[in-house]
Image (tube, rainbow, N blue to C red; front, side, top):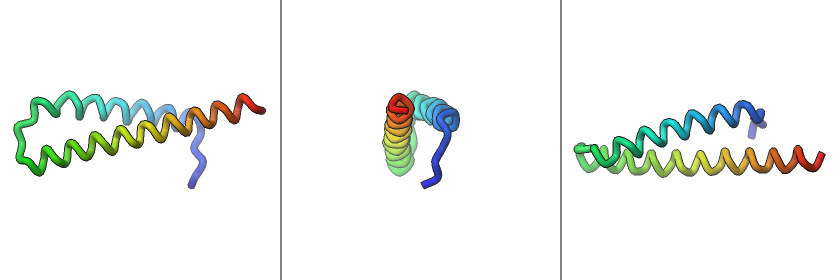
Length: 68
């Protein structure tokens, strides 16, 4: 996997958190077909997972920097 810099991870976290917020905000108002609702639900779950992975990577990078 390509190593990402801390600023790149922080910017990705900001962008994903923003997108997740917008998706969660629109979900209760969604009056779409069941397939669109399922797509949104799966997208939200994927965004949560990616956010958690980025935060884990940032924490590990922080731990590594502390050890040096």
